Length: 334
Ligand SMILES: Nc1ncnc2c1ncn2[C@@H]1O[C@H](COP(=O)(O)OP(=O)(O)OP(=O)(O)O)[C@@H](O)[C@H]1O
Image 1 (cartoon, rainbow, N blue to C red):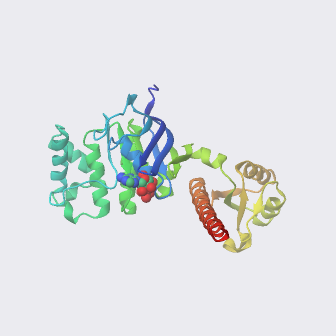
Image 2: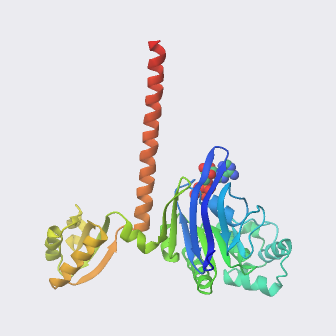
Image 3: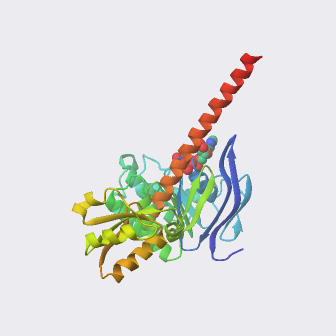
């Protein structure tokens, strides 16, 4: 047992009939960490979050939350709160009544001050006495977060919490989660928004068809990953361009000249080659005013993964067609 871990999962497998939703998943989430789950539709993110919330149990493998094994379904492990597939709310009750009902159902002795505090944290004080029937998706998401905060959890599990939030709402929720993490709460959340994950998470886990493709710090994705396209703005674009053309491991993007009248240089490189180019520029007295990836390492990894899945799916279809043709030929040859 590692006392610094909020979550320790080893070899988690979960099937629904013939569908393998999770296939030998290992996951470590440190206390006070915001950990992002990302993956294409059907990758297994919600299933994993559901296991953490005690909505189901794994078919095999071990799952520990704060060092305690999670074995029983339909009971959230101690100190864990959150939601999957959107928060469940009573539309005919107000926001405040929803939270009171939830606290009563859980057997919490949360008083109205606790409810007001949770509503305040997510910015819903002004609509506390409005029926949730008229709430937008973003408001319902915020109320779901308030509900999760009621019991002052040590681990928050949130399925796409930014869904439906406008930019101000998103900033607000990000602020709440960041503050909670600073105070020691661990957060595991899924999102299809790479910018969200990059803004919030120190570590991410990328899932594809139930398997982990990557798990670790975001920074590691950049150094581990394939070549990326970088945008460079320098004090001397012409000389920088000539230097880049001669630098090892650097490829100039075709449309370099077109971007901002040739001011911006776009190169494709691994991190090590890019480091070398920056050193060369500085050595030549060329100032670097801006350097950023065109597509973030997380987005690049995600896109590569999706492309790989499509290639695999196309290959599977070709193989299946070939098998059918072979079978038909055998049949007619008899
Ligand atoms: N209750 C269930 N019954 C049958 N199949 C299920 C069930 N829950 C999930 N699955 C299947 O398990 C796989 C993983 O689903 P899951 O919802 O965990 O993926 P996800 O990564 O959350 O997807 P999305 O991004 O679309 O929400 C999918 O193939 C899904 O169809």
